[in-house]
Length: 431
Ligand code: GLU
Image 1 (cartoon, rainbow, N blue to C red):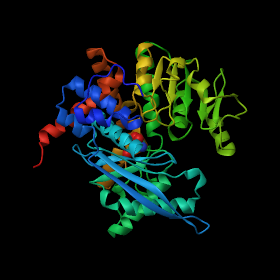
Image 2: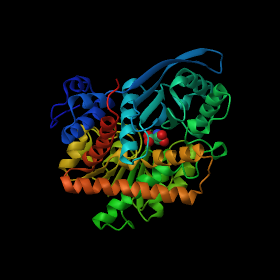
Image 3: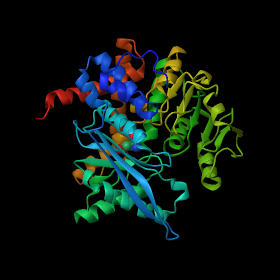
Image 4: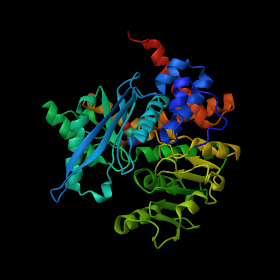
């Protein structure tokens, strides 16, 4: 990955950022913020390094009786502002580098939205699409057992991420609670409502993504009705974002998943597309559109592009082809630093992941607050609070970007890193 235009980092952190990959990208963003904020080299290095990383071997009994051993991870990047918080990802490409990067992003996301959490992430290198539900249950429970000492409602609180869902959270809750000897609903968020999950959690990330896009369009004086959007990824984040934006009057002209995309200049109907996906398992053969490649989707002539799949989707190789004026990062880390620079030079706006997709962890926080107080809020109450929190963060980022003449990622990172740095300074160093 290119590091052109980057000022030197602290010596130790520079060495750590030399490698390519998501962690190098996350450290690159931190280095830029650290420089802008004048952080000491020591504090910068502390924030470039996870506080705790645990790698575990997870033996899983397959349905045919064979035992397979897969790697699992839980990384707590930082917990100076509160318990570590972040999802668990099941994906064949999961590794320690990616999990560490994602844990760091969670720290900034919590700080930016000013919820009292640090950042964590977990992952297991397995493909949930080729793993049966009973295998997934055994795998989840064994993984939780291996990382059990790290978890707890005041220590580290997992949530769904790529390849996991509310059923996974229910198994985690149960495994943790059986070990504790009593029910501990606050140990995970994004769980079923029947177990203390929050109303509105399922669509929360997408609501935040859609609202960020709408608020930006409003600021530019662009009417939502007729504005066009392309969405990469039609999973938990992309599918709901498509629906909210469609309902707000935007034309969703292109959508893709791992198999490829579908395009319709007159606009796709997200509800029909979701029905089709449930039946066919893919979107590119949707009868209401024409098949397109993922590369063509990223290059679509649209007002808004939402990368809502995996990290590293927009790179130095394809950033030049991106036509959208606004990129809203539904995924974590979808734009590499080199691609970011290309988009910035072209005058495109990127609403960064730590702002755009923060709606999920914000409602996770509301879920945890309800669990800790044995309360249950209505969906309206959750949405009202979510909107207030997201709008405040959005305005803070836009204002700082305007004041300092920087892009939204720089502004968001500076606000977040400053809050975490302040917490470290106030707490001091032990011993
Ligand atoms: N996995 C989501 C994210 O990356 C949600 C995390 C959470 O709710 O803790 O933001």
